[in-house]
Image 1 (cartoon, rainbow, N blue to C red):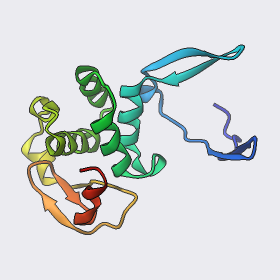
Image 2 (image 1 turned 60 degrees about the horizontal axis):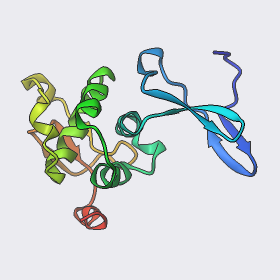
Image 3 (image 1 turned 60 degrees about the vertical axis):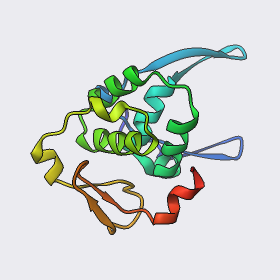
Image 4 (image 1 turned 120 degrees about the vertical axis):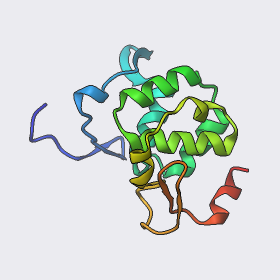
Length: 151
């Protein structure tokens, strides 16, 4: 990829931020037809995993929670993709949210004691404060009433 790409694009009056993805995170892509054009997009499971990886680009962790609650997802594929990301934070966030929604995915996530002792932020786009969740190695840095929007 060229180093001189623009980080902000404006197309038809809409602003888009260019986010560079490392090659090992470039998977889960389908090609669809949009009018006369072929367009490459991520499948729903990869989109959710990308949002778990970078919540700030999707509107925060609350949007991931809404997607997990409302979308029809292949949980096996979702977990496979989360593992392929090679990010303990992605697995921690997925496990915590799955447990909160009683999806069952959390039962398949294996974290070591070392993983649990290093704390990732549940939502990196929010301030680094809040209680620690030792089961998932997460700092729950969202207000308690945050969940009411989904429940």
